[in-house]
Image (cartoon, rainbow, N blue to C red; front, side, top):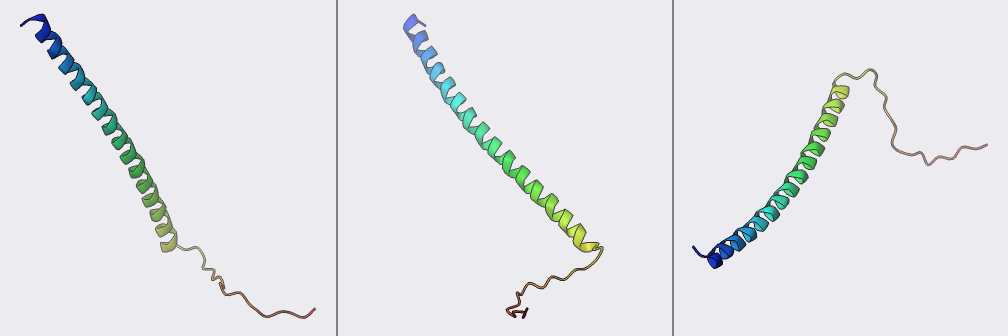
Length: 75
């Protein structure tokens, strides 16, 4: 193997190294995005569980009238 062949091989390896670094950066970004989404879903599930427990064990029932009255009172 001569110097020119070695330099050509080293250049190919340098290019492949750069491709793999870029690929790793993209994979890290995908992984980070997935971690954020997983954490969001876990938070939502915890919230749903908390609400379900509150509904299962109510301490008192309060009904709210959601319709507004159009009647005006006289002063």
